[in-house]
Image 1 (spheres, rainbow, N blue to C red):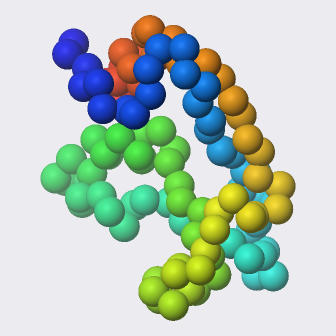
Image 2 (image 1 turned 90 degrees about the vertical axis):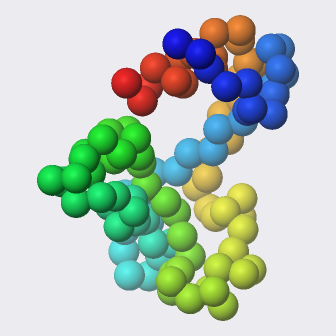
Length: 103
């Protein structure tokens, strides 16, 4: 498989993945709304389940009121409480592994 090399990092670079526990942000009093990406997908009859985000249980962490531009203009995910920062060094085979997640 030919993997595009557009990730913005090189082998040996320190990279960061941010993670949060969606169950901690499920209540109405939460500053976040956790939404899945089903609204982006095609209908099932048209290959909707082939959407990579859906197959990877993808979601978005959005501010309360996220459909409004006013709600998202000042939003900074890095200021959300309980956000975890996971650091790793990029390896030579990382891009291929990421590409294989979509198969």
